[in-house]
Amino acid sequence: MKKKGAKSKNREGRPRKEVLLVEIGNDWIKLIQAESQRGKVTLSKVHLEPIDANVNITDSIKTALKNGKFSQSSALVCLPRQTVNVRLMELPSTDSSEIADMVDLQIGRQTPYSRDEILADYKEIGYTRQGTYTRIMLAIVQRSIVRERFYEIEGAGVEIERMGISCEGVLNWFLHRTKGDTGTKAKILVDIDSFYTHLLVVHHSKVIFTKSILVGGSQLLESREESTERLAQEVSRAIQSCRAESRDVDFESVTVSGAGVHIDGLPDALGKALSLPCETADCLADVKLGKGAGDLGDSRYASASLTGLIGVALNPDVMEFDLVPDVVKARKQLMSAALSTNAFAALVMVAMVSASLYAMLSYSFKAARLKELNAVIEETQPEVVKVQRMIEVIREANRRQDSRFSMMNLFPAVHKCVPKDMYFETMDIDTEQRKISFTGTASTFQDIQKLNKMLEDSPLFAGAAEEGSAVQDNKGRYKFKVVAQFEEEK
Image (cartoon, rainbow, N blue to C red; front, side):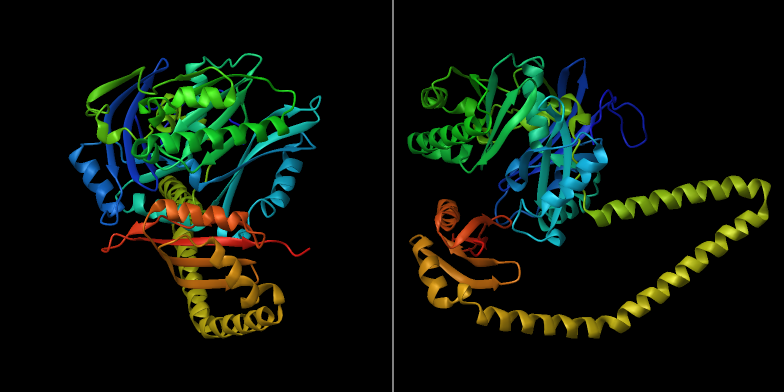
């Protein structure tokens, strides 16, 4: 998984001159076209657009690329840290194949979702305990989120080279700023985006702790004192967890980036909460803006962070995670194989007509075989549907026999977690996956976040998270879907 010393190249294998970077979060579309030379980044094109219920992301990207005259047709995509479950683990081996097997076993334990519902990747980030343990960073994301983002971007005519995580870029920017040396003590980076805050603890140029906090620049700008206090409390609790995990690590300082540079009083609040010196650092400070970059200092963009994208622009090869959907990878492999086959056939045709005929016959056989397989799939589809219905009946029967999912126990527990002025439209219990999903409407985003927190604190549930992005309907209410995982039976 680790890639060292590679020079940034495009899909044709040539060194990159420019790179197109895309990040789509809950409330912003971010597109930048950048060039990096000798550690300096030039932004030639930038498009930032807020997302609301009326925005079609595919159309917006297509229009932005056309009107902004972006010259790149392929892109590197950063998934926001908030959408990805990141875990740092130490595994008792230094053998890559053994580590891969261990990670495969760990994935199912790190998320309430089934293996069919998630995509995962990992990278090795160092050795511990006298070189006998390997420290890894594991990234897990729901397939539905990745597919949605992939097809929104691809539908705009952009070829996606890779889908990584924004924290890779945030870390690279921070190491670039500190010149790769964090000293003997750990440093804390608090990068604030519009919807969430990304916390990184870096020691010896390696991430030793990371957390996504649901307090963002939009909240901090709207209710500064209340949100600042809440963010300081959440960061303090996160650092306490980090101290518990890494008892031999001392902390040196706190750096606030992203939207945090526009929040007066925030550095003082964080410094006081952590008893550490705190400073702000603007990721655009050392960035050259081209004519197509616009005025990024405009107050309209104050809540959005470009730290992750700038970090990737400094060195696109920092994106070691690859979370492109499996079906897309298979499609690209088939296309690549087809191109290779065609090129080989063209060369052989010059020397031997028989080889060309063989290639054509082979292709025809595969096409016929594929047609036969599709016909078999169509014939068996009714039986598949029938079996699926039988499985659902069995699941429902088992659910009704299980007292843990009794409505008498479930409704009171859920009722306690529902904020005022929130209404549920559906409640779906999946007894096999041990989860329950709610859809409904709320008057504010904060109510949805409060519901997640209350469900997590409930003794009935092990965790809760919003699935997808809440959207605002024509009545001004926010439609949402929240999934909670039941606690394991004791």
